[in-house]
Every structure is written in structure tokens, then in C-alpha cells.
Image (cartoon, rainbow, N blue to C red; front, side):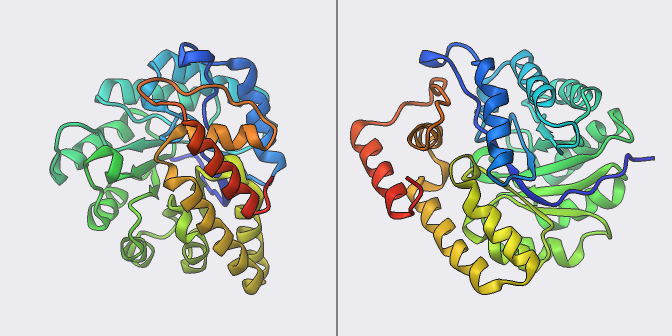
Length: 299
């Protein structure tokens, strides 16, 4: 029987602080960042994913980061650990670790680099889910990064096949796909929005939660969108969604991990360096980012 799973609110896709040059994870900053995001309005955390530069970390580093997050945040904080990897064995290993340290769920991106058809993807998620039977698993659809697409029909087929696949984080950036998922997914299946541009619309459509990279820097804005939607203050929620969409453009939709870290620095938190081949921002990019945050009223 699958462990009870219910997730609501803003799940901050927290960055991973690295030491100068990106050589090592700066563990002294992981806990303070996690707790900062919670204080700014995040309802939970999503470490080791795309925004976290998770694919640039070794499996051991990913386990250690997840452990440090779990160790330092309040016990009831919902943490979904991204555990997807290039191969099935590593993904299962990381899922087992997420389960064992007390995460509420693991999120698994589609395997990447090679092109896989729907049969291969179905078999992959089925294999992983059954290896951690009873532990909640979320699929993670981000074709812009992973190449392989979880089409709505495939997501629903997998959800109907495996009891412990309890949701999907959809970062495809296609609202019609989100509509198909929300309209046809099994009862209790969590469709979580991963595209900040239309958070308001996704929440109104029925998404119970969002996973947000922008929340590293402007968590208060997204928390206001969510909280006001829940209260029925739709004019206020929409006003903040307009600000959130502007923030998405300021940060160029998360294309450079360094932008989130520079944004954090401008707002008073040193999140360290990025890990190569990610690059630091140029002086001109830093100036433009500062100007954007000033226009948003965040610095």
C-alpha cells in the first residue's frame, strides 16, 4: 500500500550552493537557504532538480544534499527529492535513499540524451516504481532539458498502472497539456505545475501545488499568488502573477543557474558559485538583473 501523499502550495526548487569555481557543495549554506525559502512563503522544498544543478552532481553529492535539507528543516516540511538519473540503477538507488531519509516523495525526470519511445518510458517508470513499492513517486516532464516527452496520454497510462506513481511535475510549458492532465488523470493524482509563467492559471485550473525555480529569489510573489487564489482574492493574485511573469523574463526563464544565485546575492544571501560547464554572469548581465529586480520592487 502506498504511503499517504498530499502536496499543496509552493515547492521551492532550491539552488545548490557551491564553493568558488563550483568544486564542492557548500554544505554550510544548504540548510540556511532551505529555511530562508520556507520563511519567505514556500510550503515545501524540491532539491536536486534542474534549478539545483542536480545533473552536474555525483550521486553521492545528491544524497548528501538531500540529507542536509532533511536534517536542517522543520520535521513536518514536505520535501520532494529529485532522483532521476541517466540510468535505471542510479535512479532506483536515489529513490531508495529519498525514501529512507524521510522525503514525502521522489520526483523522476525522464531519462535523457538517448531518444526513448513511449514503451521504453512506460517500462522505465514501472520498473523504478516497483523497486520502491509503497513510496510515492512523481514523474517529471521537462522536454526542453531531457529531450524525451511525457505526453499526457502516457502520464495517465503510467498513473493507472502503478499505484505509487502519485503525480507529475509538468514543466513542458504547454497549458493545453496541463489541461489534458487535469481533465483525465485518475482521482487523487497530483498534477503539479512547473512553469512559473502561468502559475495563477494553473492553480485556478486545479493544480494543488507548483514547483518553482523563481521562488529562490522572489518566493514572496509566488506565495502571494497562491495564497490569494486560495482565499478567492483573484484580483490581487492576478496582479502578483503579472509581476511573477515579469520576473520570469528578468531571469530568462531559468536558462542560467547563475542568475538565480546572483538574484539571491542581491537580496542578501550568498548562494555561492555555479558548477561548470554552467557559467557565471557577465558584468552587463548582473547590471540588467539588478535593474529588473529594482523594477519589481524586490531590492
